Amino acid sequence: MKISALNGFKDIIPGEVELWQHVENVARDIFSRFNFSEIRMPILEKTDLFARSIGEATDIVEKEMYTFIDKQITMRPEATASLLRAYIQHGLHVQKPVQRLFTIGPMFRHERPQKGRLRQFHQMDVEVLGTPNPRVDAELMAMGAMFLEKLGVTVSLEMNSLGCPACRPGFRETLLAFIEERKDKLCDDCVRRSTTNPLRVLDCKNPKCREQVEEAPSIQEHLCDDCAEHFTSVQKGLDQLKVDYSLNKFMVRGLDYYTRTTFEFITKDLGAQAAVGAGGRYDGLVEKLGGPKVPGIGFALGMERLVLLLQQKEEQKTDNSKIDIFVAGLGEKASEFVFPLVHILRQQGLQTAMDHEGRSLKSQMKQANKLNAGYVLIIGENELEQGQAVLRNMATQEQQEITIDSDNMKMASLLMKKCRQ
Ligand code: HAM
Image 1 (spheres, rainbow, N blue to C red):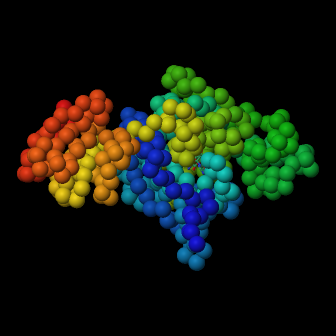
Image 2 (cartoon, rainbow, N blue to C red):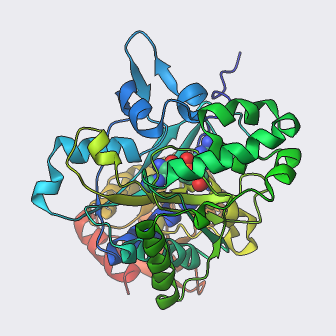
Image 3 (spheres, rainbow, N blue to C red):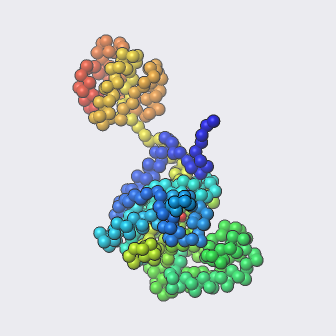
């Protein structure tokens, strides 16, 4: 019986992995332009970390976490809480008043798997800790937009403000009164949410609920003066950086830690899994996790969704992996000769391949083509006897004779020169 990967868990195999590397390389390039440093945290954390940060009444904490109940530990469902835990634990605020950190890695949520939604998925997560400045909100969204543009992915940016502990309770009351009048027309989930987290009723995907909340009050009109000023400044910053965005009063996010700015990068090309990235400000969270009174903002990009979008684009079909040289040894004697030569070429820095199965010249040439080799060195028994090998430039198809030197080092140096010409 074959054993397959678990439902919602996926291998990333050669041919696909190059796209992942590409996504990651572009991200590293853009994040470093904005002065971010990398941080890596463990996958397992204490369960309480997520309950306290993401919120007890969220879908993630209520039903999606992989938790070892006997040990009270959980496989991280997102990166923000872990990153903040590490930031507090290592006193990173003392080292630098404003920290710009990013992390890339797997997250785990027990969701219903479908295209673009997995149980093990990967996020590229960025966080700025230590500044309440609305310009930073705009700068972060601009960074996300720059990254997505460089990747060639078309998205729209939607933004909202969720206010703060001063103004949100007032809005909650207004919203509750609105919901109360329509309760009998809402789905069971929304009726339940209206007692635990009424804001979530605003982003229910059920078409009937959507219709009911169409006229719901907008939080943007219930912000306190400070939050309203912050929201206006963020928009001004986005305008200055020429980042397109639209305001979405229904965006409330599925994690409870947000204050003020929230945003999502939305694609039309992935059906229901439309958010390729999302985030927002969380000014009270570091303190709530036992750290200093430090504001923060960040977002995470979903790598599976980005790779899917790239795969959907025709131009990404090209596999740009390439090796420098394929050494075709024909027959046992020649194979024995090239075996240590290949090793020296690799030591000297050439990406080198050889065949170990005693294949014919024709099939070794096919292999070299598949590997996109720059050169092929052909050495058979005849060549060995005559002391001359053939080096073929695969791009131009030109061939030249190379004197076989029994000193592998000399032979390798000669090949290095030829391949790097
Ligand atoms: P999130 O909205 O839960 O936010 O996830 C961010 C992104 O991760 C989503 O937009 C999506 O692209 C991807 N994602 C989430 N769940 C899955 C899944 N099951 N399968 C595939 N991709 C998925 C957060 O996680 C926050 N920590 C973001 C943040 C950072 N806020 C502030 N800082």
